[in-house]
Length: 377
Ligand SMILES: *Cc1c(COP(=O)(O)O)cnc(C)c1O
Image (cartoon, rainbow, N blue to C red; front, side, top):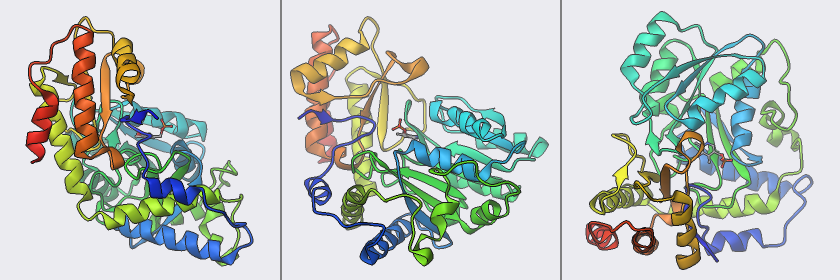
């Protein structure tokens, strides 16, 4: 088996795989499933410090959450503010416009977190927006944004917020309540370390109000959050829930709850990773705002990214991520989130990376694996 040290999906623990392989029930008819589903959503609410909203699990990969948020909040002609400093951030305009919104983009330097002061100046002049979207960790570069500060600012103007934390949650701290987030999105396959296939959504009471008071119905069936809202009272889901996926997710959530040091582990592994790469003579893409879940480094001159990544797989059985769009072939990413964020596998990855770099003609300036090991001691 290849080791997926990628920016998602990540590696999955044995007990999660085992839970997915168990016999399963009919989730439409078995009242125990409704209890289990609700209890699992309650755990997600606790993990995100969400006391004033509702968590839901949707059957579909993380992108479903982005679409469901746009479908729920956008009505024809609504102005939507796209706050972005990365590829996922700027791409939300697609969803806003798909549902009839008018997307207005506020862009910030891609090498740093979103400039909150510049956003303040922008909002002072123009704040007539139904909602705004932003990304917690924009994965193609690994930049971490200050969700709390930005969403609190938006809230002062009465602008609802949609936060994509698919690549942040459980590896970065985030509080739904105190950040004043209205719709928060997570995916099963990042730091939660379950296989891809599920989206997690947290919806604030304010967002439910806005959704329930729409003038027009939500133009979607499968991505319609309103169809999910009262599943427990009605004992009805709009579609048959992927019960095996949810059985696995439940165990992955229990793994996170049992791991009291999970955020510290992510922070330390990320620091050690960045230190190892830079001492090895590699350049980090970001100037600041490095996330604890993923690190992007610049592919050294004269090295072909695709060949390096192929050597990693062929010679060492380890997959790393390239990047997307304008960063394709220019950046390589190590996903150190969830089950990937452990010393042993990180040391193995850094050793392999040194070997693959050498094979392509780049001699690391230091023993990256050894640096990592001594940092973590
Ligand atoms: C992974 C991810 C998603 C889900 O997208 P896929 O590319 O389909 O995995 C959404 N947003 C962010 C920030 C992500 O990292």
